[in-house]
Length: 316
Length: 304
Image (cartoon, helix red, strand yellow):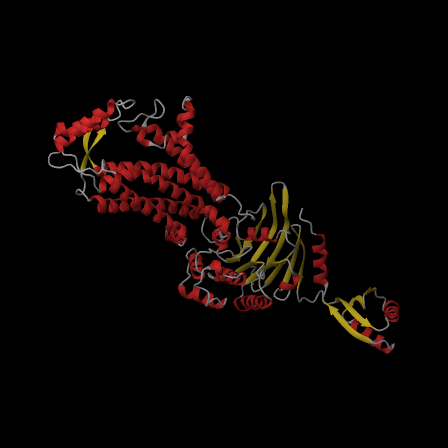
């Protein structure tokens, strides 16, 4: 175990000795700060604060929405907003003002960036050692290749986790600076299974980020496998990112076939089982998707392991 | 005195091609063994098998009696190696590189790291990024990394590559010291005889994956027959004497006559020639058996 921790330490040092790794954190920070500024300056609608006479304000809003929906092609465009406002009015809940938590929730989509960065890191994890030639010095130590591989894989997961925490914390800080903070766990009105409901924002944030994490881990593991299999990071990055973006489309095209539900990408987005959504393919359940994900995950790791431990490290 | 490393009928095939054929030899502690052969002869493949980077198709390699195939960890613990070029993490300092490898092995403290750095003479540059090192400095760092855990077998693949003559001399002295003082078995590969001749006790010549011969560098056996070039004024007269009186085969090489003969005969023929009033300008003994053998091999090696 001491052994394994030393290996992890090595991988961390190698990872963070490179500017490229730091630049990923910098990019995330810059994007969030920019998004904070843009929301603060230009978006009056989301960041709207309601005064003491919020009831009349909401009614006026609804009237505006109705009016706008009379225009061509706009039918039903704002029904959701109107319903939400009505819920506030009926239950006498004052809409909370936009704050750091809301900002954090809105920016959960940025975990796409984290997926991208984690894929790049995962793809380089094994391939880079081959590219640098250092694999020859790494694999002649009295440590099994299995251990070395898993220390590398664990480093990828740790990187993803630290990025996610970083994203969360920076979001919260930037959000708090621009929009303030409404307490520790403010509630807000969200559409759920049984219509609109007042829910705690923490739970929403964790669900959002957690669901993103599943796709992230699957794609990072896939990139790691390609990296181990072909010992080439460019290929691993290319394939994983292409599949990440094209995955849903592939499933869409093939969805007429029964077997398409076994495709990884039909299952990576577990939010399809949330109350207001429909599964991608009829008849799929949460349990089914989790099973499929676990099977893919095991296959990815097994292939990585076989490719890494069983093959010769031959000449260039 | 045991055997530090033993190769037993080692074969390696990739696909249907046999790359290494029936390699068997052993290396004793305190011995410097040269592994000589032209590029593509299978030196690096053999070294990769010695350290477990490649699997052995059949046969076995034992390090201090432990099989690299069956007891990888036990066997490789005793080995320090550079395989091909000493590649380092370019974005880390030399010291960080060494610490990285130190963390992968037991019982290496900071003191030992300092000691090794001093040993290879990298004190000044050790805090610089390895990416800025010259090839010679990388070679030294590579040796430092191989020595960290005080291995009893040291494998250096082309260690003189990229070094200037002064650097080669330094490495040579250093390798000799390791072998003589610390009883380390050193395996040095090269494709140039001249570069390793002076540091090795024995040299194994490999060609097309087969071991052609093993020669002791200073052994007595090949001292008996030597090749001598003689520069004389009257070549035809000398030639006659040598051919008729001593029954030797004489070849003409430019200004020289080249003869293969027993070493003990040299004073006798010089006396004889001098007695015949032939002016001798130069007598040159070439310790050639190794060199000749090597050139024979080099000439014919084909990368099949």
